[in-house]
Length: 210
Picture 1 (cartoon, rainbow, N blue to C red):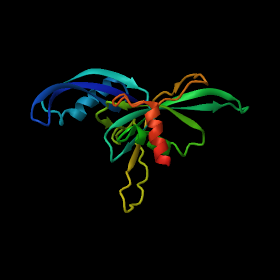
Picture 2 (cartoon, rainbow, N blue to C red; picture 1 turned 60 degrees about the vertical axis):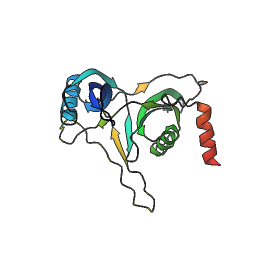
Picture 3 (cartoon, rainbow, N blue to C red; picture 1 turned 90 degrees about the horizontal axis):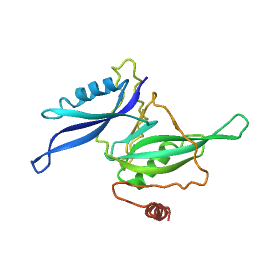
Picture 4 (cartoon, rainbow, N blue to C red; picture 1 turned 90 degrees about the vertical axis):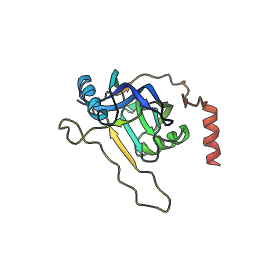
């Protein structure tokens, strides 16, 4: 069964000014086991990183889907919750799922996660959005016999203005993160990089509506 793994890699990186610096960067990839994840990161980065590099950490990462747009490189982790209803129509449990979406900023990440999940036949809440340090994602590959092929959303017909193309990578092997949540708990949208507050994001969204 496949899962997402975050692999931290330490190596000497050449900066734009020509100087060299020792850095540690996280990558996200699909693999069967921790051993497979380590082997694949060496395979993926072996030709792109000059010199030696070291894997300093591997952690299983709970993600339900990844929505990648071709016009943004920054990743945001979005936590979404919805109520699961039992056969009698009663609320059984609150389900929590994590998603990654590429966007230029928190506001756009919110809009894109709403757009990406708009086809769901349930009401959901985006309870948090945080900037992710992920550098690059290596999804499932067709040559991996035991791995599902990454799904691609149909490309929207070209318009006068460029419409970002989105790809969806599903983590079929990831477990759902289910938890009971307090009904009175507040939803927050936070950007760990810019320290944007919920009120600032709400003002941005209100300005856009006007």
